Image (tube, rainbow, N blue to C red):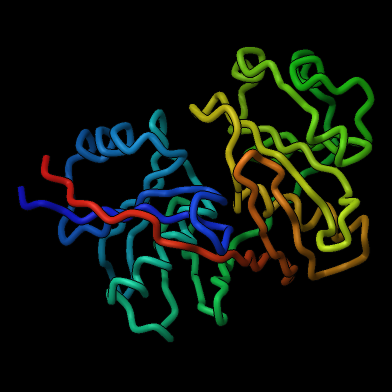
Length: 265
């Protein structure tokens, strides 16, 4: 097996060591399932993206150190960034990805990368018994759920930033993750959020594009806006632009390459 290049990219940031890191591996030929899982565990990032050319685009799979996921925004931003930066695609050409969530596209808009994702609306839901105690939220403004995640709105961004969840209890809830969100007190942002996914092997994800497929329509209905900017208030922080487009949502982020390496195994 020939050595393969792998690139680490920080997504949803314009500076290194912020946003959400993803490893990107562009393969010339298919690799065994066990190899993909071993590489994802070795990289030990929230996602490793594996790409394989197909039909004028690329098959794209996202693996955490524990599981394969159906949708990932930051690793898609990172993948598009690598395709353009490393010359797999001309700078102005749209990146097209065949994924578990159907055909996804990415376009370059200056320093920003825009993803065209399906909306995943979260509808009002009764929280399971462990959810609010595990988050440490006594009086949420709202609780909702979509096919992937629970969404919990709290009263302020101060309350959101102060959360110290019990991840062992959250791990028992049978969903991909839990989005907690609040209206932003910073005028640069419309809303802020955090994303916890211990059941997927990630206690707190630094910047989660796919969570914004729910956050976009949720805050659009509250704020009466179709274009918004969100801030993910993790330790690393991340900035995500959203634009509603019917049953689709345009998710915008920036990306920075921080490491290039060669897989020898």
